[in-house]
Length: 435
Image 1: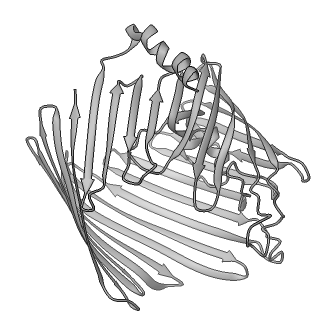
Image 2: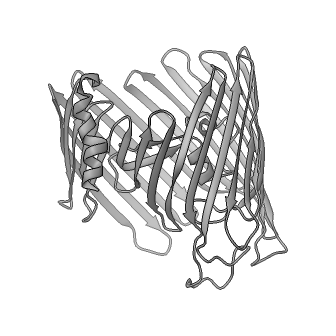
Image 3: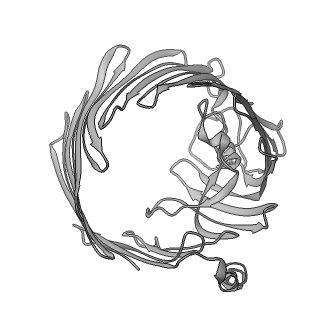
């Protein structure tokens, strides 16, 4: 592995040094009230970068090496690779449909994330391995992908990946979701094509699972759009059969998603958005009599003249599952003033279940920048049926030449009906230096 890293990643950084932009050294360290420290050291620039991160929890040290032709460390999927991870989960006009299919670096300073490697063979073909953990499944897959543009209007992507079905043979689950799982090897072949011009476009994708002992898994998507002046309409039809296995080894829960959205921007300072989506859920062997569906209607308006900014949104959801019907409604309204970093914004949110209010929250945030000094304050109150949470958070930042001092302090009060109130105080402080 050391030889591969040196030959494919580090050695070319010196060979092609004349093509690099200016170098940068970034040092960042922070600690909290429990005397736990984490830090980051980064050497490189926008194209070539070596990052070492150490987190508060033991065993969380991470080394990242990023170049235009190879990656090692924290990575993320984009485009078609991201889509087949969670099929039938995106909305009309989703950015994922238009993303370039690739494995990209994940530069966020956080403990959670996926690790892996990507190696490119020019601009023709790329290979990758990606590993990730979650509370419900384990992501472990590898494969090849490519994307080619034909002219200015057509983009073609394909990907072939290998992974395993989740093995529940030794679990404590006493029922199965549509089938018994044995950890079989799965080959996923995916393809997408898009065409667009000034007034309309169409984007389609499909994938097939191959594995022993069951019918092939199938995923499909069709997403055309129409655009004229300040109006845009997007449509979506996507679905899977009950044999489609996702790269984390689990089965897709949605059989069919249909939807449409409309975006209107008659003036630069006002925007209207409306979206309607319905889902048909897969049936389960544990309760074969019932499948289910969900229905969602969302609308929002954003008003931004000069430095005044406000918005309102409503989301109505009807859920029918296992022979039960529930209605949920989420409302949000915000009003504020913004001018660069300086801002003051008030926001109120409410949630209703079957027309009874089950939660509401209020948030007031303010921030300002005076020369090299930045301050941000946020107060929030969240009320639910059996608990209430109040929090106040403040952030300070002082920048002097290449150095930046930052700190964060937060107070949280939590009151539950069946337990004693809790008060939590947390703070962190750190230093960042760029050379």
